Image (cartoon, rainbow, N blue to C red):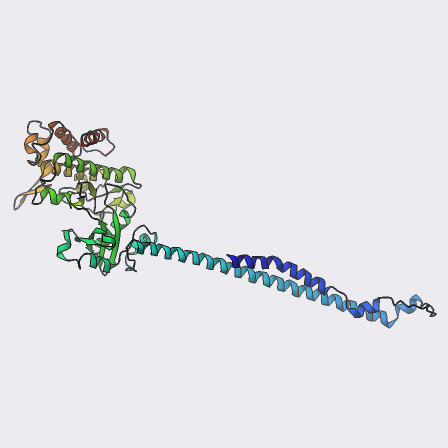
Length: 438
């Protein structure tokens, strides 16, 4: 900046230099001054005055006029040269100033990027270049909203992705527990991005989770790319997925009636944020018990946003049918009509899982399956038979009054009557849950 200021002062002084140079050049030639000046003599001249006709033809007078004309031509030439010099000098100064401004801007930007990289390193996140085929992720990284974590850091943190660190398996990959710098424990989802669908889901999840921040939605810690694998790094949820607890070896014994209501409320809050608060609204498209993670205090958070989509008509019409059997809304399966209500239907299925302790679809025989909705719906509206179908783990620990309210909520999320999260009946049921839990 100081250099630019000095050059600017030089530009201001150029006209002064030129004006002084012109004034110096304007001094009369000594010879002309000598000829044109009268010669004074201390003595009186006795030479008679010359007549006007003789003066006109005097050779000295003609010589004086010729010298004056040549002097004028020389002066005009000097002025032209000085004008050209001034214009060229001004152009040079403008070019120099422009270059200095560009250099100053480039220096500031490079310094800002360097500081950002240093900040990420101080947080314990190693940044490296990544594959050019993940184009949308380059934009995410440039915005600085999510950190690109070096593959070596992930490899060391997961013990070379050993089975002793394995937390679970998914459609496109596996989830591992990892310990990064500063003893930070995270969950690392390793995805095989060899197919276009897998790569698209990976990019979509990183992009969405880098923008969405809510207590009931999983937090994105970073991501990584190595060869054909993509890595999504989440906060670690100590109690794993709701599916593992409900349908695993413990059969939901650690989930009391109160805890199950709290989990249901957390899921509803997460969906409410996606549908009503975040703009544009986001449809999860794959809400299920395996995508609901629980922390050490059984706080529930929504995860796995690979299939999620912003609620805009130009996007929804181009999507192919996706989801998990048992959780897909009937109208979406039959007509391909995707709305927020598709998530609400899946939420009702999760409520049934929490209440009944059963899977969404159960095999009765090798070629015969039964839906939890088909089996439970007739009994949910019958107060006499309702207590008999509840999960035995919580059967003797709940208040029947709240049981009927939960069933009311499950009925309105059924394909026959379900509404969105702003429906008064839905809001009223959730409000009662909140009062009971608090």
